[in-house]
Length: 242
Ligand SMILES: CC(C)(COP(=O)(O)OP(=O)(O)OC[C@H]1O[C@@H](n2cnc3c(N)ncnc32)[C@H](O)[C@@H]1OP(=O)(O)O)[C@@H](O)C(=O)NCCC(=O)NCCS
Image 1: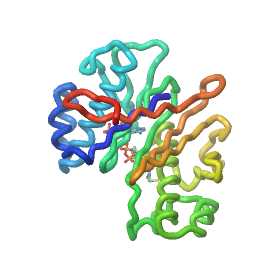
Image 2: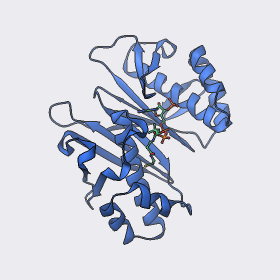
Image 3: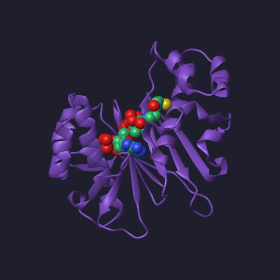
Image 4: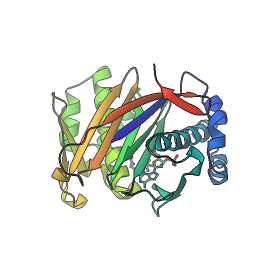
């Protein structure tokens, strides 16, 4: 499971986006134009470019030759070329960082968020966290509270994206237990109709300000390693981050 990340704060987002836009298909460039906010447009373009460049690192396919489509819930998938066994990708973007997970798992996804305090977060926490998660948060304060809130948030989003259901799940029905040794356990309410032992989760903090989580259904035998691949954009290419 390869997790590619690229920071987008050190360069102007629009600069990277204009350099890499040529890798995208005309359809993708049209899709990008539909975003009203420049930041959203740039994030879409840069995330797509990262997905293309990362996939081409793993497979002998030119970055511009990948064809993506979306399912009925708007989850993107590789439409061409056909790779055997099938490979999947998941992208996530937030201010300052884009991420792309490349995996052979049928259901897997990444979510990244910028960890920053906001007056809205306690209300959001009361809506999306389970009672046990709210209890675990209640003993924290300040930066610890904010960091833990985003641990839960990214784990929930990664699971929702892996299932490909968009808004179809009640987030408080998916509850995480984070042990001090970094072990992550999930509990599902009956409505989720899923088996916790079928899933594996990772959560990584990317200092100074990002948290990234991955959810994967264990449709493989044995252990699965998450390989982090931080890169930076160098024109229309990517290079390992120094
Ligand atoms: C689909 C969803 C999970 C995306 O999450 P996000 O944090 O807003 O954005 P991210 O950058 O992490 O991910 C966006 C990418 O997810 C992918 N995506 C879109 N729909 C998807 C779906 N149904 N399933 C999986 N992936 C999806 C796309 O690649 C999209 O990027 P693109 O449009 O640029 O190609 C989100 O919009 C959603 O529906 N959330 C519902 C759950 C919720 O309310 N969460 C609150 C916080 S806990």
